[in-house]
Length: 135
Image 1: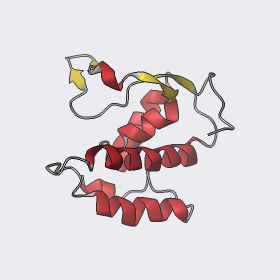
Image 2: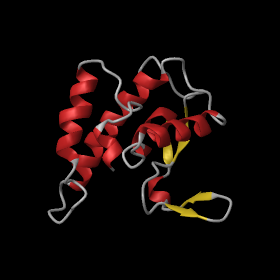
Image 3: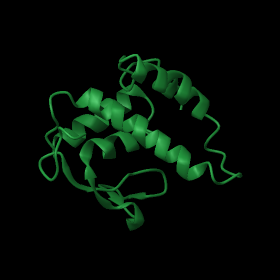
């Protein structure tokens, strides 16, 4: 992250989109819940959104749309994967405190597949057939 720098073309307003923080109209997606609005790395914003944006083809479409607005660095896939792993760990830390939280049921697969792939330096976010395709 240090080599990305801030502020600059990789840093700015982000929203950390997730279910319940976006309202869809006929022609737009409108972020709400401004507690999730801050400044940060665009790549973190993408990595966070991929927690809920499971299938590889949906992730590719999301990334293509994002790149129409924000120019990403050449090595953006490996950086997004690093931010995605960090975002998932943050998600676990935030929601693990709630004993009634049901959305943590699939996190074992995250640890077994995505963390292991990341540590082995294997790309995983855009691989068809990955465990996230099941979501």
